[in-house]
Image (cartoon, rainbow, N blue to C red; front, side, top):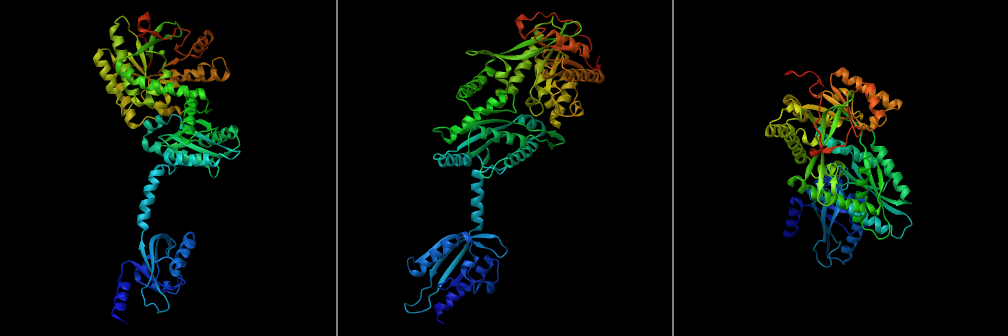
Amino acid sequence: MTNGEDLFRSTFRDSPIGMAVLDEAGLVLDANPAFARFLGRETTDVIGRSHSAYTHPEDLARDEETFSQVVSGSLPYCQMRKRLIHGEGDIVWARVTVSEVVRSATEEPRRFVSQVEDMTEFHRTKNLLEKRALYDQLTGLPNRTLLIDRLGHALLSHSARSTTVAVLFIDVDHFSIINDSLGHQTGDTLLSIIGKRIQSALRPGDTVARVGGDEFVIILEDLADLAAAQKMASSVATAVHLPVRLADHDIVPTLSIGVSLAEGEVTAETLVRDADTAMFAAKEAGRAHIEVFRPDLRAVALNRLAIEGDLHSAVNEGSLVVYYQPIVDLATRDVFAYEALVRWEHPTRGLLLPDEFIEISEKANLVVSLGAYVLEEVCAFVARHPDFVGRVFVNVSTKQIGSADLTRAVSSAIGASGIDAHRLCLEITETGMLLATEEARADLENLASLGVDLVIDDFGQGYSALSSVLENPVTGLKLSKQFTDRLGEPSGDRVSSAIAKLTTGLGIFGVVEGIETEAQHQKALAHGWGFGQGYLYDRPLPEGELPFKVTGVEQSIGPPREDA
């Protein structure tokens, strides 16, 4: 053996890079320890077997073709990234370089050296980065980037087919309440569950992606028509609409779904945008709805976008105004309080009602500053009119409670105006009361300790057991208008009568909302309700039109106060 052969043998044996000597058929004639370790085997197990025995089946044909080119002399050497099968069954990635051993021109047989470098960690990192770029980290679903790519391919592949492609844009109803009240961890858990439920309702080949906080988008291929897309949307909604027990609360998620169908020349971005527009129409229709995109909805979407931009200026410039609707004693019809209802004097659109901008303010994170403005205006209104000795009810968003420190905002408004805290009644939805976090509950307790009355708004919508809602320091409740509308029907009368008795038993006061007819007034009175509100008595009025003929306001409308 020559010195060169000794050097090769020493290098071969001690190299940290896996090395194997192959014959022209790819049979392993010799292997160093690093090569065997990389494959998770003993050296004796490797020698005598074909190099292809450790190659991933999907890479085998390419490898054999490339190796044959080296053997034939078409290539001086080859280098490739490939998958190998580890002894424990795992797949490992390697960069393999194969070249012929330099020998004399006449020396036979020919020998080849295969050098194997471990690329497994590199590929894991690469795959992780690709996954982060293309997949949602919470749900594992495709993100918007991958969604648009897949939708683009789907539109191209269907251009010559008789079937079509549809997009479903999904928004989880009232998700912000859950997120704000029960915390982001609970919200994330719910989103993961909803993602899995959506997947369970789809066909193989359909794609669902998470594209925003509580927004999902589905690509449906090979659909016969719009009716098929609507049927799939209904299946998804049904799959999601099942109770979920989270943070000791039963939550029944519902979806607002927008549907758009690929018609004519349409891009992936346009199809998603149209489905998004239809989804907003579904929310405006009352949520838990499915709406199909129509061209006129685009004008509505542009209008909503314009309103959001103008609303930023309105909050800062004070073009919001407060109207006041009376709440009356049902027995005497005397006014004992007013509810403050914010309006927007838009410079070009005229007077806008809350339904036209409150939800937009929540989406745009303006509701806290808007709410603070209303509180300040109401307290200033009470201070401006010493002849008015009643109370004012003010609606507050769940976003104002807890982390936004509603107590601080109320204290600031009361302090600036100098009014008694007892003059304020804060209306909080039943859902907001139910899903309050410890931080939010502390905020409510602090408000009650100031002397502010807390009232459950829209009571009776059935979000939770009564005990959960009334754990908070409430002094009154307002019956949801959906029950007022059913007064005179047996089922509506039973609910109204039962809740009226409940308020009496708990020592809290009750207000029936939305009374519009004399018959509803008489029914509410007969059921035992103390107070009512609605167009039967008066519409909301600006400050300048209020008569301030308020009587009976000093009567007790709740449990006795310790300072009374």
